[in-house]
Image 1 (tube, rainbow, N blue to C red):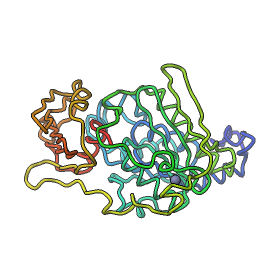
Image 2: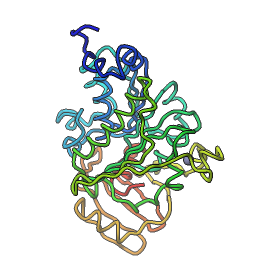
Image 3: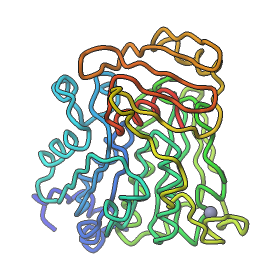
Image 4: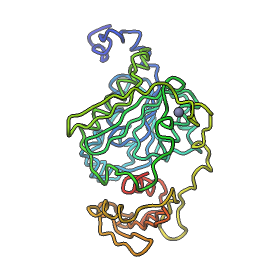
Length: 347
Ligand SMILES: [Zn+2]
């Protein structure tokens, strides 16, 4: 150990030492979703010296991201850089000694084996439940720790899933919530300090696991509310006997046919996101009022989003159907359409 070693202060932590730091340097962490949570996690783990970091994100940097997505600059927003690429560039400037992989892709059952090959830990930086459930099944099936977190407003939930030892997401919440039923950071807002709490919990567990201190990971669900200064850790116990994933090895979210695919609509510069259950259009309309002028006509809610522009510089238009389908007009990029859906409608 030398004082010129960048990891000196981390090696000084009693449970880490040289051995733990060497193990961290051999670790491979995937960060799925490089938004607010993913940026903070990627920054901390890059500085901690995790040997390989794989970033996966389907979206581009926007001006409204800069309040909390700490790896991005005004230039990245102005030039609409893909988040994974912009983040990787910044991370390489912070630590050139580690390997950073960047994938601008929409993680799905079809590409998950390729994107997550060889990873030791999966960090949830997602903004949608559908992809989280895919990750949950993949993690349990392949025995990879999965560090779940979700933050809205000033509140968050964090839980580290150690397959076969602690409950998975489906033990606690057997099904993802229906589309449009939950607030998202784009509709209810979010403050960066809440992201910081959740990302810090994820990263400290990642460092514990990689440095051979897995026994220090607490088998609990952390629920916090910074605005009202409240927090609670619920004991989660063992994987549930009734869980389809943990107990019955039924990994239905990994089946490519488990959910219909979003598809570009031929010649329309639009993408249709298929139904994931009915949408309450009145509730959705209320939530979208600050983002555009939305009007309901029978089973359809239509409106243009102020902040989202098409390639031609016009506002992106959403058509939301009561049966749960949504058509995103103004792009034929399926990944971008799904990102807009996740942020404004939520699933
Ligand atoms: Zn389970």
